[in-house]
Length: 293
Length: 316
Image (tube, rainbow over all chains, first blue to last red; front, side, top):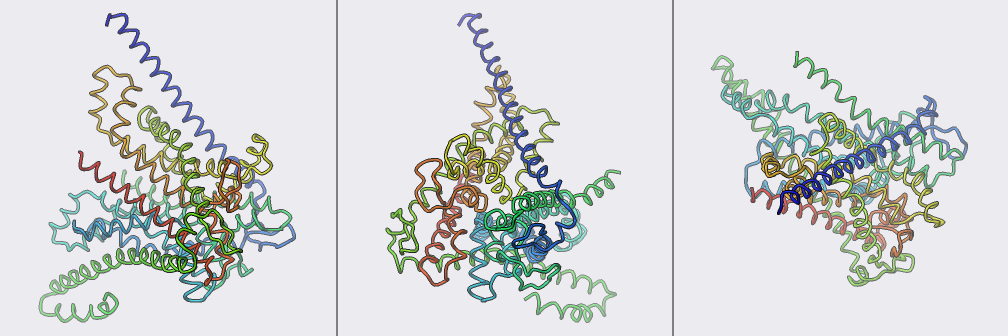
C-alpha cells in the first residue's frame, strides 16, 4: 500500500467516524425531544384544568363535573397497604441473599426463584389475586385483595434492590464491626443497614412509583368501582385506583367530559409518580450534605 | 418459630444476667436476636419462593383443566377463538404475541443500543449525567399512561397517515411498546458497555483506530452478551405488558395478517375476558392456560439470561 492510498483510507475512516458521531448525537437528540414532547403533552393538557375540587370530588356517572377523590385516595391507600406487607418481607429476603446465603445449590435455587418471580407478568399476579381472594376466600374484589396482590408484585423487586444495596457495603466496615465482637445481626443493624439505607430507600421509591401506576393487577383484584365515599378505610370495599380509573374513563365511561377527566387523571398520575421518585429522596440529599460537611 | 420464641426472651436473659454484672445477659440477648433474625431473613426468602409456588400452583391447577375439555391440538393449533361456540384455538393469539414482540424489538433495539453507545462512549460527562435520569424517568411513567397516549395521540396520526379507518393493530401496539422497552434495553446495554475494560479501548486506539472503529469492532463485541441480556429483558417486558397494549391493539381475537388488523395478544385477551367468565367454565380454564404460557415464556427467557451471564463469567 502506498502512503497516499493509506492516508486516503485513513481519511475515509475519519470521515465515517465524524459522520457516525453526528448520527449518534442526532439519534440522542431525537429521543430526548420525544421524551420532552411526551411529558409536555401529558402535563400540558392535564395540568391547566386541575383544581382542588377535581382532586377531592366523587366521580359522576353521567353528569359532567365529577372528580377523582375516592379513586385517588384508594391509590394511596392500596399503595400504602401493599408496601406495609411487602417491605418487611422483601427487605428481609434481600438481606438474606446478600448476607446469609451460603454458596451452594440451595442458594442457586433461591436466586432462580427470585428472578423468576420478578419476570412474572403483572397480569398473572392479577389472576393469582383473583383466584385467591375471589374464588378461594369468596370475598370478591376488595382493597385488601388488590393490596396483597400488588405486594406480591413488589416483593422480587424489593428483594433485588435491597440485595444490591447491601452488597455494595464495603467489607472493611463489616470486618471492623466483627472485630469488635458483634454478632452478625448487630453488624447488620448498626453498620450495614445505615450504610445501605440510601440504596434501599431509592429502591423502595422505584417500587412505589411502579406500584402506584400499576393497573392490570388492580383491575382484576380490586375492581372497577369504588364505595362512592371519600375516606373509606374499609378493607373490604371495592378499590378502583387512579390508573384503573383512567382506563375506565377512556374505554367505558359515558360521562360527558370523559376526555377531559382522562387528560387530568393522566397528568395527576404522572405528577404523583414523579413526586414519589423525588420526594422520598429529599431527606437523603439533606443527609448527604450533612455528611459532606 | 419466631412468634413463640419472642416472649421467653426477657425471662432467659434476666435469669442469666444476675450472676455476671449484666454483660452475660447482654451477650445472650445478642446471640438470641442474632439467631431470631437469621430465621426471620430465611423466612422472608422462603416466603418469596412460596409466592412463586402459589403463582404456579393456582394458575397451573386451573390451566391444566383445559385439556379435560379440549385437546392439546385444538388449543395450540386451531386459529379459531370464539368462546361462545366452545372453540378455544389460541394459535392466532400466540402468533400475534410473537409477531408483536418481534416488531417491537425490531424498532426498539437499534435505537436503544445506539442511545447506549452515545451515553457510554461518546457523550461528555454532563450529557451522560443528564440522560441517564431522563431515561429512568421514562421507565417510571405508568404503562396505562403510555396506552392512553397511544390511543389519543398515536392512533389518530396513524389513521391519517395510513388511510385506514381504525388505526388499531400491531403497528400501534408495537410503537407504544417500543417506547416502553427502549429505556430498559438502553440502560442495561449502557451498563454492559461501561463494564468493558478500558484497556481494550486503549489497545485499539493505540493501533490507530477511530472511535467508530473502536466502538463497532471492540466495544460492542466485548459487551455483546450484556446487550443480548438487555434485549431479552426488554422482551420479557414487551410480552408481559398488558394495559398499554389493550388500549391500542383493537382486541379482536383473530390472526393479524396486516399491521392494521385489529388483533389481540395473550395478555390483552386475558384482561378483556377474565372478568366476565364464570370460574368453572372451559373459557376460564383456557384463559388460565394462556397465563401459564406467558409464565413459561418468561421463565424460559430468564433462564436464558442466566445462561448467558454464566457463560460470560466463565470466559473472564
